[in-house]
Structures are given as C-alpha cells and as structure tokens.
Length: 304
Image 1 (cartoon, rainbow, N blue to C red):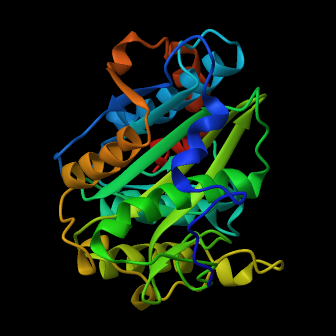
Image 2: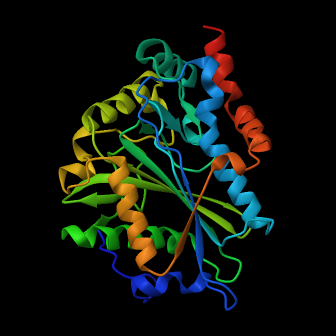
C-alpha cells in the first residue's frame, strides 16, 4: 500500500495551478444529483438508471469540444440500488444467468457503464463522484489522474487524522491499482474515462450501510455468472470482509457530509465553485448511446 500526500512533487494547494489561466479565476462546475430513494429501478425505469452516465459523457464531450465554460467539473451522484457493471462483466461465461439472477432474485436492475473496471454496488449510501478535467494545457498520464483524486481525498481526510492507503485489494469487488483503503480495508475504488483531452475520473465511496451485503451480492453474482469458468481468471473472488464504509473510520456518515467536506477542500485551494443544474446539459445523444450499450442486458431480461 502507498500513502499519497503529493502529486508530481507538488503540494496539494498547487495541484490546481495547471488549470488556471491568466485572464479569469479558476472555476469548477458542480452538479449534485442526490437521492434518498432506496427503491430499486424497474426495467421500465432504465432511462433513470442511465442518466448519470449521460451527464458525465455530455460534460466530457463538451470539454473536449471546447464548449464547456470551465476547465473543471464535479458530479455527485448516489443512485437508487443497482449494480454498475464494467464492460468485462458482459463477457462472464454465463452473463445471461448473472443478469437474470440480479433482476429476478434480487430485484436489482444492473447497468453497464462506459468507464473501465468491474462490477460495483451503488445505492443512496454509496457516493459516486466524477471529477472531470480539461487537460489540454497540462497532460495527465493515467496514473497522474488517479493520483490527483487520491491527493484530493487525502487532503479532505487530514482533518480527521486519517491516512489513506492506495493499492489493489485483490479480493474486493472491482479491484484496481488505485483502490483506496483505511487500516487495511477498502472504502473506495476509482475508474477512468478519456475523450480527447477531457478526462473523467470516477470514484465510488462507500459512506455507510451494509457493506458486507454489498460484497456478498457481487460475490453471488459472479457465482451465478460462472466466473470461475473464465479461462483468463479475470474476475475477483470477492471476500466481503476486506471492504468497509468510510463511516467506520471517520465522522462522515451521510453522503451530504462527504460532499460538503470535499467541496470545502476544493474551495480552500482557491477554486470558485459554480453550482449548476444537470438539466442545462444536452444529454439526449449520450442517453441514446447508453441505451445501446445496455440493450443486450434489456433483451435478456425482456425475454424472461
């Protein structure tokens, strides 16, 4: 495990300097889509499950097309209960059975995301955060982009005397090089998506709730999908005990508290926060693309 306090040799408060211009203050567009609805999506509500991903892609494409009026954006989006699948999950040996089991036995409508990684659980007590950046003037390697958000999280956690550990937790769900742990237990994972010079970093942070049940849900899904039959061994053997909630270690026991703490840290770094409504974004094209990405899943469920 590695502890991050700097990125590229820079102090945290200098991290945002790469995005500044001479002629205007540095601004970040802030989108909040907070829900307390704990009712899982039905198949007829698929468009609602897809919307957060369309919002992110609308922003990414606008940044890349240089039509977005800020070099930075952040999107907070807990969801109703679902399992967010990576593209690799659609290649499970028995994907049909995995999806059918989730929907028929667990009343969970999953969604296939455009970013990389594997399955994660999302519900109103898990905060999804997308940090979107225009890297036209300062290129970020894949690792540097990950390090940026980890350094941001570490600055936030300094107020509670907590050091984050970074490194793959192989038996967690969606294991990756930049898994974020506290005292040996994973609390967050990170994925990334790039469109030209626009970079989106996707964070899921388990704030509170029954994290053991979340882990067991993914473990059982992989069992139903015959993941152990995959010849390349691409799916984790999920052990629910290796993951925990942030609230187990810090007095952050609501999504809203996390959002407030993170935005405070960003504002303290000299970034102007500009709250915007996602309804002002043109998401129709990207919703259609998400629909096409997920059509294989809907076809399976419609035929049950």
